[in-house]
Image (cartoon, rainbow, N blue to C red; front, side, top):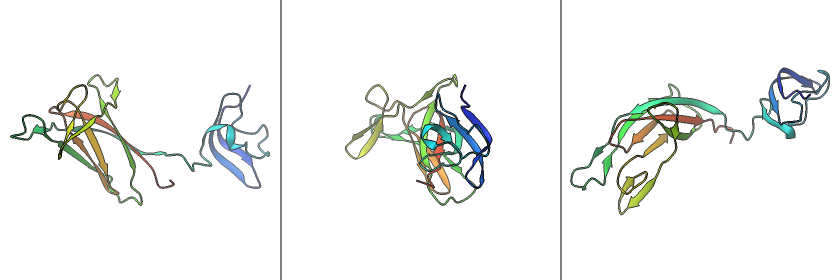
Length: 167
């Protein structure tokens, strides 16, 4: 039987190595002897010793964004978005990579059906038909993020921010 998950001492290469590793099916995450070298990274699915190339999550937020409103004189084709801004409380040295998903009212589904249709010099966001139905965007800086809601009802958006400092 393989040791697929290893926490703590992961072997030694002159210096003891500590961390968390998860191996692919059929492979070990740690050597059989604690005095042996750590296992090769090729057969790992997660390795806290070598996080380069991964995009760890910086933070996750659930935010409720107020409804957008129709722009007068546009025949219900243009929306002033509702907005929500969240400060990080610090200034980061990088801009996190955002992913936003709309939470269904049942809290059992995250929707990623984001559609953008551009008509001339304004934007229309839609889901299944032409017209403003659903849509959102997440804008991120080093100090905060803003979610814009292009729906005429309030929406709860789950925002995942990935740490891109090592990319």
